[in-house]
Image (tube, rainbow over all chains, first blue to last red; front, side, top):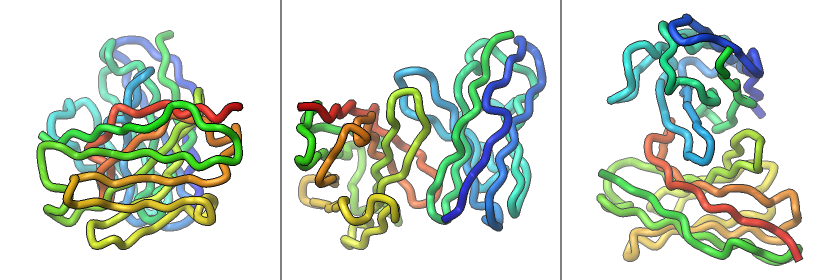
Length: 105
Length: 117
């Protein structure tokens, strides 16, 4: 089974900051990785797929990179609506990371 | 615009079977090369993929739940369904349906299922 490990679990930042979240896979998943944003009481929303492709309608301040076992999600300049929980997901066998809660500093 | 909507009982007794249905609107469940998945999330915790079905009826399940899960599809009703047997309190969660086959681009709003006597 492929394990996905995100870091950090919690991230405190301010509006305008650049932030990076890391996701590591326990084995090679090529570029088969997506990133989601989830706000309280809502379903997750896909931001990035195939490691670095921006989903239609998602602001360009979100970007993804990586391949193999190490991946990153970067938000270039945090906006108030970006404070949420972020999950990575590999779509070889569909496991998710444990989540990173992005909170206001 | 594709929309998914979960429905089913919000309360299930321990040892019984949890049954949910996802109704797809805004497009045919049979069109395109899509898989239709169930995902759950216990309160305050992360996401767990349960399983998926293709409109041919082909299924894949999370190995940790495989012995208790059945996913089926009814293309005439544009629906797919989840059955989870022998439930315990650990199965209490918000259950989502979502469209694949790779990343999940459309999700239902989620439905809370509580397992309690």
